Structures are given as C-alpha cells and as structure tokens.
Image (cartoon, rainbow, N blue to C red):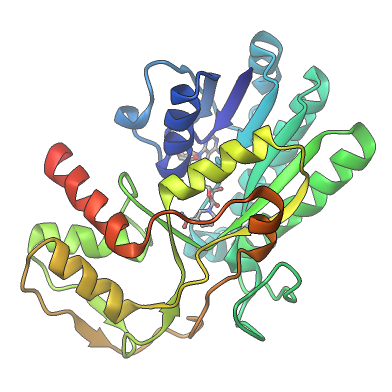
Length: 305
Ligand SMILES: NC(=O)c1ccc[n+]([C@@H]2O[C@H](COP(=O)([O-])OP(=O)(O)OC[C@H]3O[C@@H](n4cnc5c(N)ncnc54)[C@H](O)[C@@H]3O)[C@@H](O)[C@H]2O)c1
C-alpha cells in the first residue's frame, strides 16, 4: 500500500512517515520546505519539493498513484492567518482543494486530515466533544474547519473516504519553537539556552497535551480501519502551564524560574477534549503521559542537539 504524506518534512508529518515506514508502507512526501526540515525527511520515502497550491501536483499523483493521502501540510500560525488571511486561505483551503482534485483524478481511497481545537473558540463546556458548538476566532480556525466540509463533499460526490482528526496541543521531538510553536517546544528552547521562559497570565490555565507518537499512531489506524468521520485526538487530561513547566524543569534538571506577564487578549482560559468517540470506534487512546513524553524529548535533545 502506498501513502502520500503532505507536510512530511514537518513535525507531525515526519513522525507519521517514520511510523508508516516502520510498518512497511511505501511512502512519498510532498513538502515545500517552508517550515519543514531536511533532517526530518525519512530517507526511505520518496521526496517531492512542491507547494500544495501548484497545479503540477497532479503529475506527482499520476506518477505515484497513492492508495491513501495523509494531508498534514498547512499554514499553521494563528498570527500569520490574522496578518495574511488571503495566504492562509490559499494554502489551507485552495491548496487542500488542489490535493483533493488530485486524489479524485487517481482514485485515492481515503484521505486523513488534521483539523484543530482552534475551531471551538472559548469552550462552552468541558471536556470538548465532537458535538461542541464551533466558534472560530481566527482565519486559521475558519480555514481548518472549511476543509472539513470539503472532505464531506468529496466523499458524497466521488466516494473518497475521509477521517478528520481534531488534534488538541501536539508536542514531542522535532517541534519547532520558532514563531508561535507549541509551548512545550518554546519552554524546551528556553531551558536549553538557560533563558527565562515567559508565562502569560498566572499559569493556571488548562491545556490538553497529546504526544506526537500517539498522534502518528492514530493516523495509521485511521488508514487501516474501515471508518470515516470526525474525531477528537487528545488526552482528556487537564494540564496547567505551571504543571507543564514543573515537569520539564524536573526532567531537564534545571533550576530556572519562569516569569509571569499579563495574559494575552484572545487567549482561551481552559481547554481540554474528550477522546471517547475515537476510543469507542478505533480503540485508540493515548499511551504516553506528560512525564513520559517530556522524558522522550529530553532524550531526543541529548542525542540530537
Ligand atoms: N502542532 C499542533 O499542535 C497541531 C494542532 C492541531 C492541528 N495541527 C495541524 O497538523 C498539521 C501539521 O502541523 P505541524 O505542527 O507538524 O506543523 P509543521 O509546520 O511542522 O508541518 C507542516 C509542514 O507543511 C509544510 N508546508 C506548509 N505549507 C506548505 C505548502 N504550501 N506546500 C507544501 N508544504 C507546505 C511545511 O514545510 C511543514 O513541513 C497542520 O495541518 C496543522 O494545522 C497541528
């Protein structure tokens, strides 16, 4: 079976590629390297440096004839989406339609797509389940959610099955700390440089951190199981930013104190999500707790930095 992974040089995409190759799938990658890294690219995968908006992408699909597509490539910054909504929509919406058209042309069986907790806005209740009302507060939220509708339309019109995975906060090795990268990557970077990390607000705000291997595993399961639909991928575990920092401080054995500054306008206070639906239908639940995930990042940093 052949899987085409877009964004396969990025943080989550490269972990998915590694897991697919371990499981003996044939893998090809499309990434324009705008945010990807050469060292993330598995050398057993065929790599194409191309933008998902490029109309020539069809040639890659015709050549490779993938059975499945995992579409991780995206403009991932909420701030960029606010500053450049047109570019966000071009990559996340039009780029995805370009991929869907190519899937249609070569008869791809199924596409797996990562949506985001950014589509819920300030939660109306916790934990957030798949029926939670949507309230997008950034162009990024709108663009990620718009694709959910396109997936459903392409299934109706052309029979392309899809699984849409709404990730909470993904963390793990290879996550980029530049820009507004995940808080774990940012803390990690500060700890390595012996600099003072900043916490916005009192640090008691709650988030839901899911480890990247758990995310990669659910993507592979989504290919293999005869299921279609929208699922949360998360831990249903409440972790405060203070607790996260303490866990990192202990694992990295440093004595750094973060500084708390005024909370940012628009930041959501508490958010965590339920994985009951995907557990019932896929049998998936997270295997890594925060302590194990952070320990793995430390080990990765020791071996690679
Ligand atoms: N990291 C998280 O916590 C999180 C949470 C929810 C959803 N997601 C989604 O998961 C996916 C992967 O995110 P990530 O954190 O691994 O980000 P990432 O930036 O590490 O990976 C994205 C990859 O896509 C590539 N890319 C970007 N624009 C492209 C384009 N126009 N053409 C071709 N390639 C392009 C980048 O070079 C990069 O390698 C994204 O779709 C993101 O929206 C991530």
